[in-house]
Image (cartoon, rainbow, N blue to C red):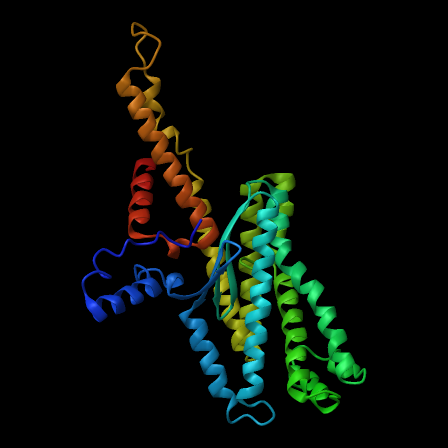
Length: 354
């Protein structure tokens, strides 16, 4: 499943010369323009997985490089190493989700890189084990890579433990210790240290913060699903996530941690959208809306359905399938990912349920 339906582009790319090609390129980046998650630049495709960089991610990298220019001890060169390490580590984390999803029989076809991490488009089979393995695939990559890079940093610093064991909220201390004790070129030690640190942060945040879309939230949901069903498990996980987002927001404000506050806002919004989806699904079964038309058959009529009834049943089944697909898309990507056509279909289904 993709982030959104791809528009055909109409005549934007035909017969317009340079202007037409430019508009076609803009359309490829911005999509229909209504979904901010679609504002991304395609980078490459490998193993059947498209990798894109969100425009905000590109802006974030440029902003960090500019910020580092007047900073003593960092500079744009070392910051560029950090950004490369961030990109590579997050990408490997998302590949972990994708390959784990395929391993359990699901689908995975896209990774979006953006300022708060990465978003993998995955669709595992609808059972708790498949969801659990898909979720754990990402952190497993970081859990394997962190000790590898930690040993590498120790080897490059003459076993300077303060370069590896430091306060994660004051990373400058660890980086400074690594650079001071470097026995190899400083830039090489810096790159290895960034890879170690970012793997540690990704592993900690994803597995210690119990809210969507963090992996800890999805892990809790999958484990609860085993004993109480998917819907109830999701309801409990969403509640836990909203509380966690509130606590994190307060911590971000008190300690002046902008990134922490941004993650809290994003996680809270994701949990709120998931709650909205649950409430939409919480009414009567969608199929019950149409049950009356097919169930009221006169006793004098022949038992077999007529051609008109068969066509009506096919139409109802198609509508139900489309709504199921849209709801699955909301679950994976949020309400903002819907196209205008999908929104109309959802509104139509909601009106019938009302």
